[in-house]
Image (cartoon, rainbow, N blue to C red; front, side, top):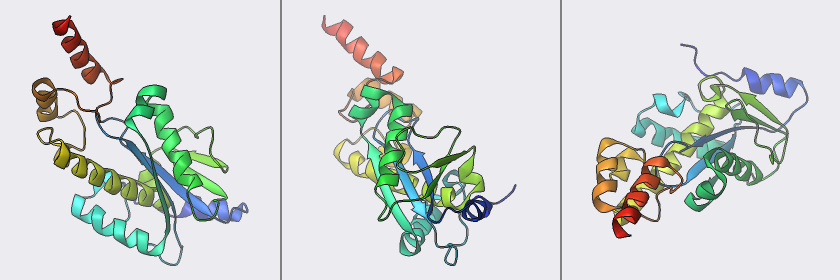
Length: 210
């Protein structure tokens, strides 16, 4: 399996783009919590060793790389809330988080390398979509690691206030224990009401109460 490389960034610089940000988001699938995006501009002379798609790394390795990335690169993290997800749908909310992350960089990026096959429509700079970008572009790998680490920390914090749903381990995804907790404990303010399993439980409760 090919490791992530810096060729997309090098090619873009050859086309005249100076500041190139890798952009990725985490949290489209969970039933609870925000969607989180990161934009990372790496220093070519100081790229941490071992960057990869965050899903291929252990939590401990991700946390260590997160700190290394933040020490040597420009990093911006942004979110779209559960309320925004329910109002505008998860795809648009993921793009909104990406747009916010790019806009939050200390100085504007000249080009954003976006994980996936779509470029967010309100991006503040030109974008280039790269399918499976987190596995092939070092800048996007870095963004995926930062976004995943930050979102997991948010879910761990929320788990302290809403025990029983297992968010400290399932990060809000619809695991068996999370689904059981939804049935037994009910829906929290941090659940995405537009997602079918949550919607169905709310509908059941409504039917019972009417």
